[in-house]
Amino acid sequence: MSIARELFEEADKRLKRSRVNRVIDGNGEERTDCIVITPEMREAARRRGKLETYRNRTENPFTMVNMEGAKQLATMERLSTKELGYFLVLQSYIGYGNMLKMSLDARVPMTEKGLAEVLRIRDKRTYSNLLRKFMELGLIQSQRVSLFKKEYEALYISKAYCLRGTSKENKLVKVFIEAMHELYSQQDIKPADIGFLYRILPYMHFDSNHLVRHPYERGFYSAEALSLRDVVEITGMDEKNVKEHLRIKLSGVHVFGSFKAGKNSVYKVNPSLFYRGVAPELVKSDFTLTEQSRN
Image (cartoon, rainbow, N blue to C red; front, side, top):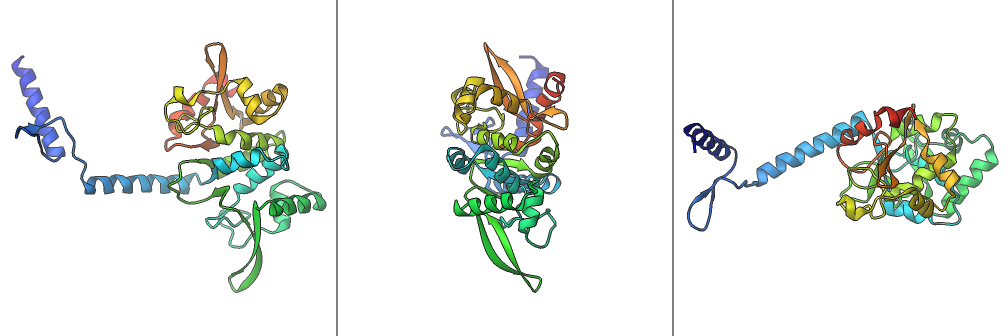
């Protein structure tokens, strides 16, 4: 071993000693290849994580859809794909207590008329029947509340299906509020398109955003990416409709990226709209490619 290399390794050992606690093995020798994580270090990391989460919520606010709740509703025969779309849109209008509001900074509850407005439903009978159905199924509850010395009839979405804030639960998908509102404001986007999105949310893989058969498996190969035929099977739609839904765009960029895997195509959801992990920027680059944004 050269003298230069010996000096380099010795300097490296000293650097490690200055950054971590000393570790003595069973022979009484110091180990320089181990890192001790102290309670103080763990707490500092936790605070950094909370700060990052806070920044994400502040700069790009989101609600969180319960994947198991979505899967349950997607298999419910009483709800059409169009009605599922309406329900997902409403989930982007909840406050931290799950009360429906017209905007993030609104101080009073959303009214029935406001509900019709955000859902783009003009016929009163249609939105009244829709709200009644949601309430009969336990998706939405009505509650009298007192705010700023006034009484209001407030509408709340059940926390079994979504929430805002923090949670230790892993089976959640972030829905970025502004992106959802922008998507639904597009004239070519129909409630059934949003309902299709709701049907596939329970199959999103953590971090990668791929559509997979086993979304709670961290290993991608164990998770089993879904092919077009698989998406047709789990959504219960015909292939033509599935292909149309997979082509929807948000501001000119595809909501679903299609990638070749052998003879099949596999699909990834644009993290600008939905995400399960903690660093959506790592996946966004896949959707800035020409073939994903303009085809």
